[in-house]
Image (cartoon, rainbow, N blue to C red; front, top):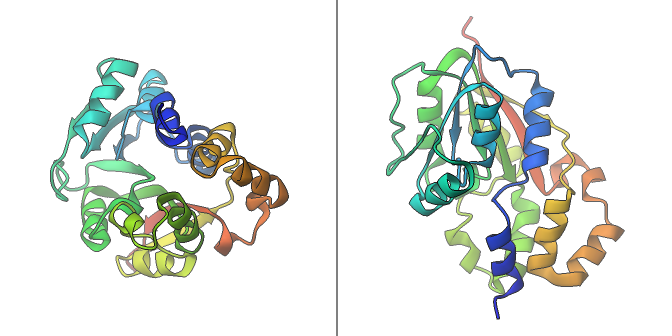
Length: 228
C-alpha cells in the first residue's frame, strides 16, 4: 500500500499555489505588457494559470517528468527543459522572474543569481519563495529520519539573514512579504509527512504569526540596486 507521502505527491501538484498567487498579486508588479519567466515551473500549475490570464510568460525546469506531467494536466504550454545553470535566453529578456520552491534546490546559488541578473531588465524583479533554513532543517530531519539525507534535496537552505546577504552580494535589495502559508495544501503536506501529530502541532502553534525570521517560508521580492 502506498505511503501517505506517495499518496500526497500523486494527488497534488507541487507548491503552495494559493499562497504563491497571493504573493505575486501583493507585489503589484503584474502587468500584461511585462515579459515573465518562471524558473522551476514543475507541473506547470502556476504557468498555466497565468497563460490563461493572458500574460506573456514562459517556464523552464530541469525535470522532464514534471514537464510531461504538466502537459498531461494543462496541455501544451510555453515551457522547456534546461540541463545546466545557464538559462537559454538573451541578456535583459524579462521584466519578472518567478522561482517558487526552487532556490533551496540549487547547488550554486551564486551562479544562479548571476544568471537571473543577466536575463532581468534594469527595472526587473525576481520573486521567490524558499523555506527557512532554521525551521526546515527540523522538518526535513523528521521527514527523512536522518540528520543528513535531506541535504541532497535541500542543499541551499538560507536563514533570514543569510538570504539578505546572498542577494546583497549580487547587487539585489530584497523585501520580505508576510504571506500566510497554512492553507489546505500545507496542512495536507504536513499530514502526509508527519501524520496527525504534525497537524495537531499546527493547531497549537500558528506559524503564520511567528516572528518573521522564524517563519517556515520566506516570500521575497528582489530588485537590483540602482546605480547612482
